[in-house]
Image (tube, rainbow, N blue to C red; front, side, top):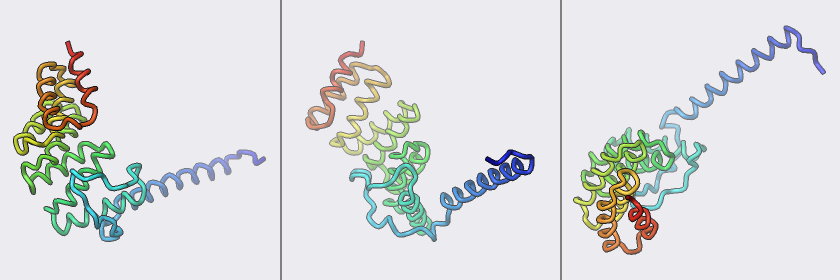
Length: 197
């Protein structure tokens, strides 16, 4: 066993400091590398209504590469709706609500009134505890497309769970049941709404 002398202790501290600096530098080099060096993994972009593409939300290399490719696409065309929507969805899936909001709002500048974008943006606002804003976005989505059941579903959730407004939740739920009787968790939503005092 090696005795811990002043010289060994100094060497240990220097090694730790070097390791921390090296790790910090590598993290920023990978996370902030220029989009030009990113691989071409964003060829099949999907809109908000489609299923999310498989990614490693925990920050793996495929996700970083996809994000860099999407950012490169936005450098070439800042109004690239597919890239804006995919970046918004990736950030939404990762629970990065504020960043997702920015991309959804930019996407809505390109495609105003899109009910899917409005609904996804509303969900993000609900997540950052702004249910009033969320509800307004869900209502916009329904005005844009009265058959858009996802926005109506989220209206029920906000009315029941955030505002505890029984009558409004049940009214929206009745419309949802007529519009899409196969929507998920309808029975649970009805039980929750009916239990509101």
